[in-house]
Image 1 (cartoon, helix red, strand yellow):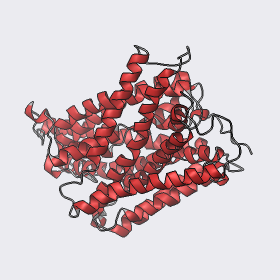
Image 2 (image 1 turned 60 degrees about the horizontal axis):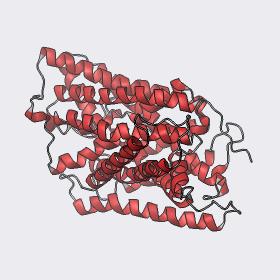
Image 3 (image 1 turned 45 degrees about the horizontal axis):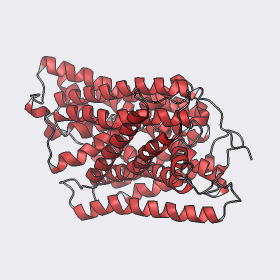
Image 4 (image 1 turned 180 degrees about the vertical axis):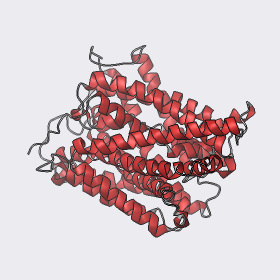
Length: 471
């Protein structure tokens, strides 16, 4: 059976993909609820998480540029089981992430036609999420040549939203003054309950640099194009997060900013003051397109993990099948969409729409950071191997790479702990905490069981199978 995917990703597609998966305007609203101190937290998050992540991905992808990304890296460092668990955790975390993105998208889509009466309508949010999943999956089944149009429009819409927010905030500040006071004291990060919970969301917002490496076999000249694209994307992403946060805080007082609809609240407030009535629906439409583009991009990325696991016989052979016409892992794509649909319903149990969004976001953070722990650990362990001229290490060589891995491990572990804390406004804090932690443990346990089952049914393998490839 043919398992070869076409190389259709060049530098331009890499940059668009990194901007779409690494930047999400919805996190501007989450960060802005911290006030002006969010600017410092964005900068610190970039320094202690994004930079280590980017350096880690560049080096590991230069060592092992093939399909699978962090799944392959962890497998090379620690053996089949850890590699499988890394890929499994990364895949399942995105199954939780999709509904969170779609809830945010659904909330903001209401501003297109002034339908805010559906703000707390659970059926609306559920139906919108299911339709969004179906559309993004169907486009990805057609292949990246079609999907990249969705990704491109999503990236343009995302940056158009942020740029609009910055411009409108500047106009308001010039004409009426800022709604939020920026002082040296306000820039000092607080350590309250709400603030600590949202710190993890800031770190989560800076994830995504590793995503495109999962499609390593589909990237043209990855050792050359990936570092350049990642450097440029990192600068643009961090700067836009900070500028967008300033724009939102200028437009609205901190107390009036909402996680789900904060961006649209700001745009609506500004355009009403300026008499620009057509801008708000246009921004709402851009946010909607962005959400669908991000779901499509992440669906495309993570579907390669069960595909590779199917090729390795850790999952049923059906996951390794390519569509006979479009040469895409269609079974993996539709299966993960079906599982993500289950989380659309689970997130609503015993809570409000806002509570469901917060739970889904926290669940995604906890699950998503598990593979980052293993990936940073793999970077440290793989330093035992010699680095040839094709390996792209940070300046300083082995010692700096180890330091990068340690900083990444510590920042990731801290974010996981903070993500487990329920918001102060949550009416059922114990239920909220349980819905964050317990599903993560269940998903990891299910992954372990599937690994054992797949290993028993796997064909004869080489003497290295099941063992780490390092002593």
